[in-house]
Length: 321
Image (cartoon, rainbow, N blue to C red; front, side, top):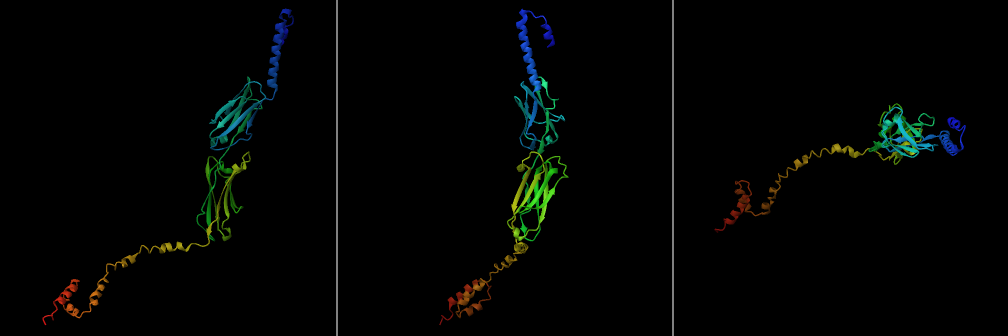
């Protein structure tokens, strides 16, 4: 600027139009630079407190405001770790897409850097860094309710699969919406996805028939995590028998069935000697001549003897009379 004004110390009239044109360009350039540097050029993240579920698709947005020139973006990890994501730029907005979200992102601080014109803002206070909170919580499963008997203790197990971080997990047992047991897992190392189990021992009473037994798993995260994503619960209906079924003991008594020795006793069937008891048929022949048949009994007891008995009757000894 000083060089320009020193040059016009003795301007000639012929140079006046060129001088005015140069002055106009200098003033416009000065005003543009001033507007760029003087305005609040800021970067903002959306969401403000990023929380992502492991395995899901998550988008982290970096938006620049206060720059009249073209904006260029870059992303990096402060620990120089790979982000395993892809970047989409559109004007003053840059999006980093994690698909899927991995557990390794839990310990990574993400930085968004922007360039407004030729001014790199990576060292300005308006630069934004953030840490993505990664979590995982699946639906609990209740087991051990298959055979409940009134007055007999039952042990129920609640299994919560794919939990992260498990050191902020709380498991509650509720019987008819009343908390009967609460268990925390703050001692867990929370290094990766874990399967957490909680057990509850209870002796059912008759008046609890049909009531709901619930297992509720909650991640105690204080950031922007909706309640419906912070907790998962599963309920089962209490259905128990009043007394042990007596038919369970007869099952061993049913083992005599293999001792179907009665089948062996049925072996008398081959001793169907009663069939020879059908010999009353000859008894049905009360003919006196049957006495002569007894005389022929020296023959074997074969039924043919009976047939021979009829042969002498055909001879009829008295016929010679």
